[in-house]
Amino acid sequence: QVQLVESGGGLVQPGGSLRLSCVASGSIVTIINMYWYRQAPGKQREEVAGLISGGRTDYTDSVKGRFTISGDNAKGTLYLQMNDLKPEDTAVYYCKARSRSKSYWGQGTQVTVSS
Picture (cartoon, rainbow, N blue to C red):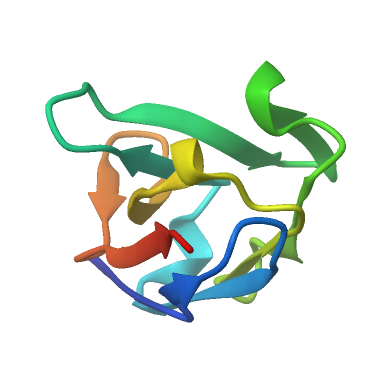
């Protein structure tokens, strides 16, 4: 089993920045890939960025050039640097870890972008 705890969310004005953190515990040796997802009110959960085994990164189009994912899957740490935040980035952000057979989710951290 893997437990994930996110932190770093909050209220920020448009154009501002936040850095989210995710720390895994438990069987972190089984983690292959880690991801950030988000879910806005009334919308489906969507993948924002992924840190893939070998160091490859993926981003959804709406955050390319503004968000940067980093971390170390082997150590179970994941970060999301979010710059130039927009009101449409408002959502609960979740950390996800994937092993060969299971996916694990954190409890989420709220990000609100508003003036």
